[in-house]
Image (cartoon, rainbow, N blue to C red):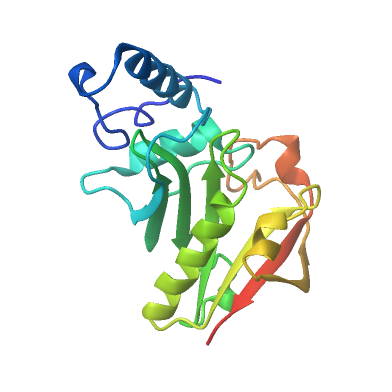
Length: 202
């Protein structure tokens, strides 16, 4: 997996001075930092926490993270909220929320989790923690539900663990490229049907 600008840097990671730890710990820290720069969690360093997007982080940096660690979705053009999960070394997961893409659901009561991207080998509850915080953020803003989509091949276990439920809607997979509106062709994974999940809290 290629290195992504922003995965390790002032916006995403915390530099720790060598004199603040033993030589063996500093060597281990360097290994963690190296693995994180290639999209692998490796191990926890210090306390984990969920926080909003770091001040000064740019859209390009968020999209660099998504490109490096998200399996099939492309970049985002905007959002209402971005949440991160991190430890004392770096951010290792990002959740992006925005207005629903489906016009019928753009009702001032619903937000959509557009992206949920985590490095490889993160703790199993990392995704459900992000989803739980997303619910609290949306609820505090006056929204009554969240929606999100998973590919047909995905089990959605993190959504289920966070108390989300499947609804009866399936979005058929297709390419967005047309003669009138040419688009870059997407991976075959994205051509799969998508299942909608919903978390109602209003």
